[in-house]
Image (cartoon, each protein chain N blue to C red):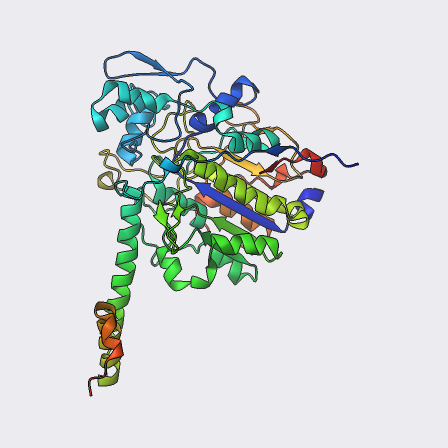
Length: 77
Length: 405
């Protein structure tokens, strides 16, 4: 019969280890800054590419929906 | 080429956060004198001149708060206290003094010298003693996370020594782009969207197809569709899942719970280990991005300059940096059934045969493993040592390779 491999137990974590209220670390803060910078550039690029009324309306719709999600359920007519 | 290299189809890298070699694995020297860890003679002086020895008192959580300094000027103190500074050989004597500056609490500053006894980290120490442990794997820069992780992705940080890195108009492609352009497969797996990718936001934006989440990694392992090269990121923050369940950070960054990281390393290993064909064709590397301000006793060696220079203003030390010396030593373990049990890869402690590795060794090894056609690469990556030679002709029996449960 083949010998079984050695089994090492994975240690258990105490429930108190979880703390989502821990102050944000510099590492996470930098991650937030990086994401914000990339998204901001995206919005700026999108804004600068607008040439027509139709393109403007799509941009306006996208960011109005972000600010006021309930608005999508109503018609302006 | 060895049979192990001949059978190699996948390389997987798991990069954890902010722990030094001595802190995590230094205690293993008591069991195996080939391991260049804590001998019992290591100490730093504190701000009153008292000798503070390295002690096996590290705790899983609650000990390293505030987060120890690991920015370039802080690391300079940790490295060169008591010397005239670079290019002198680092004294490794300023860790306690550097940590004291953050809280002005003498007793608390001593905790930067604490390390884990092996039984407190059963997963990492099992891997270290069952596969290949590197005595001389160093962070790429004596500085923080982002610039160090950049070396794993690009073989350079493009002259950056800090945290603000945007990879635009860079002269070298990431290893993932190089692999894909050459007809190979590569992927970065981040934990989930709450955790996201730490350092390659531009890549996430421009090349989303290169990314997956950790659940995809587990599925890809099960279904035999793992890419040739995979880089795995841990979970960087405590957060709640969509169903409200608590998800612990697994990165081991202070002050996250160490055992969550242990379990994460075990999960990555098991995902490969439990698929017989994947296990025989995969080389897994577990390492850490940098030391996180925590004590290590080995002076980082010099290295060839990277072709970039960080200004005196950027380094914050009053002196420019030519990327001509490495950061502080970190844990690194290469795992495969083709690696003999208890391999110790000698480091700078052996003047003749010692080898030095850094994070640029990762893209260098991947390029070599998959015969990727030469493409512009940083001087540091071109000079970096590779670790495919650890794979031998002998496949260890299944019973000789542990599993975690």
